[in-house]
Length: 128
Image 1 (cartoon, helix red, strand yellow):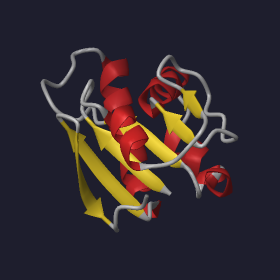
Image 2 (tube, one colour; image 1 turned 90 degrees about the horizontal axis):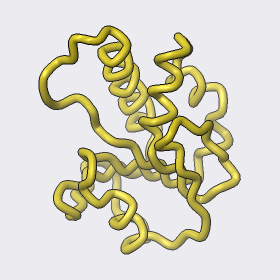
Image 3 (tube, one colour; image 1 turned 90 degrees about the vertical axis):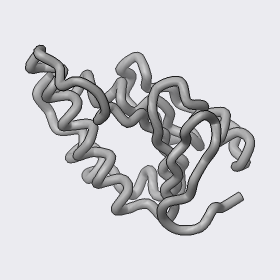
């Protein structure tokens, strides 16, 4: 599995398109549950937000479905930077998103951080 992460609007999906071959993308940015039939699962943070609102663990969701995403490209926005939100649901989301990212990074063969459209491999080797 390849995990691509970075801040909002940093070109994560564009980076994936330029550096990897795939056909289908599942966009979860609006809270949609991941469709693991797609080659790329994008916007995982949207799904994590829905999990936080519902009080269920996104990390456990991915743990229980590990066999379905082991050969995929997963793309998630890093929400750990900035001022800590006052709203407790948003704080819970940020913590859950971080824990989910840590789990996925641990399981990934390759982890890439994208900043300003530039990818930096921080784990494994870049796969084409």
